[in-house]
Length: 268
Image (cartoon, rainbow, N blue to C red; front, top):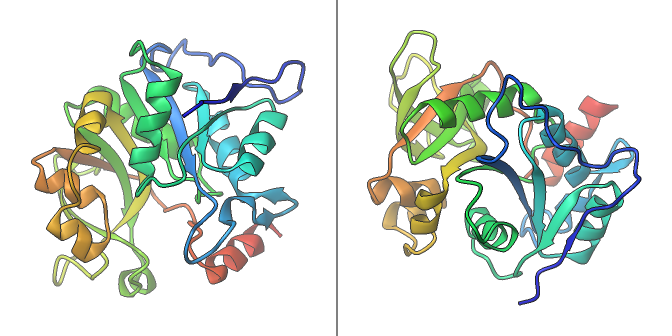
């Protein structure tokens, strides 16, 4: 496999070194956005137009706005690669046959950083065009201040979201009343736990310890993962600790044509 890298020079939106004066050390954290073209429910999703720009550009811009770490897009398609680099962003080509975004970012980080400078990795799914810098910073704080293998985010789920199988629910126990840190016990497409006072909408944003990711990608898909079609269950079944922090509202993800139209309406 020949890896391709590019940093454009002289572009108004070129990626700059983050200002880390009051944030995480620059040599520890990196943001990786996996993006593949062959989504079964919405083909060519990363390049779908939203307010005159491809979906993946909105996600990349959201990650850049957090201004806490270098941002790379890990993709299997030249159109995505060339679009991001034309903006002055960083991109790396990866294999097309990865079963998950976690596998894709693992290939990417090993190519980008073979010497292991970055030990904390934020995996920002490439279908979250409304992601905010506040959400990314909340995840970075959780990953930096807690001894977990994997960090993630949740938000209170509406009744409509609870009923939708596309919205993943997290079963949480909390360490504090402000829901800044808690342990994730399970994830499901069903309404769990039964009769909960609050249901938690899981957000597709992960913070990995690099060693945990390296272990994760060596594991075969687990029974619960195959049942729910949720890769984070592989980590739980392997005994990994997943912690979460709550934010007020989940960013709008795009899985279907209906989702895409809803997000377009937000940007209209």
